[in-house]
Length: 493
Image (tube, rainbow, N blue to C red; front, side, top):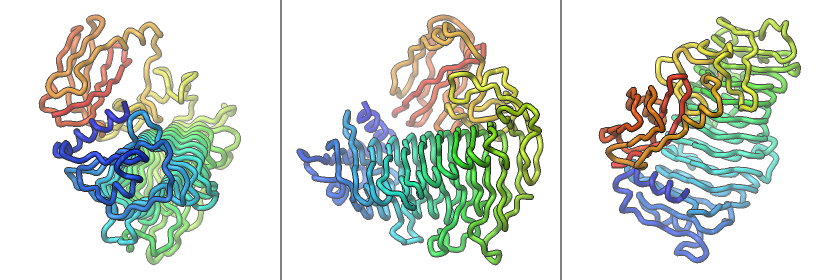
């Protein structure tokens, strides 16, 4: 099934990719290893790996597809392909338009997976997509990362799993990276950080991820980088223009660290039981003649639950500008202290909510319709998705989840009795419900933009998607009582 899905992605991303070659890798196939296949790969080719275990330590330079014909590196159908050992599983240098999907990476002594620009700062590696990979159990304890990115632009890290990082390393470490999207991943048992963005990294979106014991700083937005490694070389911040939205961060010494960064927006996250601080404001690269102080950052619509381990909510270091921070429309709750008056925060603080968010039992921090977090957030100017990939209302709930009504099990089952076909489809998507009832139908893309919207009461509905471009979409079916069901729809032309 995974192989079929991957091939659909090939077809969707490029009409000309139908003419690409399949390069089979394995002991009984044409190519002994991935570098051998990569050495002859041209735009549009797919490298399919069949061996259950591949020895790490591979180096691949100048593997480049193009905007219309990506190069795919995929695990074969029904095969758990593990890249084990080596200093890195694979080191990609000067790559472009490469999609890697479906691998498990483990046991490296350096970095789990390493992608860089070969030190050629003016020609970054670009358009890289890492999808549904598991990177785990690194065989190192120092400053070693599960996924090391240096000088990479226009990239996506999607639905990957990061487990058991090095004590001194990160899950994802970005140095001088730009225009990236880190979406729908999970991080557990990290060392220093889960995600680190430094060395002039900018225009990054960190959306809808989960973090459990994510390290000393689950998100280190900035850091300390040697001057020679900044990209661009004249950057005046460690990190700039980063959005952190709709993540769940459980544990870690500090959930968020703002370190030498500016124009960072942290919103609609759920932060639960950090071990020492909620957030830190630091400046580790200090040179007032070049670097701007950490400041001009905002923290809004977040739901924060702490316990007695946190006595200082915001740790503030020297050479920073905490007075320029904005804290707005956040909900705060301290377990076991009903007399708590709220956090001690710097900068502009307004519209605080100090209340029990009423987290739903046996959920991953969802909130019911009776929660004081419902509709208490600051409105967005565009559509923003919650951690379950559903649009926030206007005004949004506070936290990573848009609020939902508590309904009976019977009602839930009834709402799920839906047939939709054909899928994939190119012209009509047919919907069949079990009964007549008022419903809203929304079709929206991966960025949360609503493509089609309609109302219906009928048991049978046809949706004309002939004008919708090829891609993967989410169909959201919203019932009169406020509950909803979502389905994935693939459009091909």
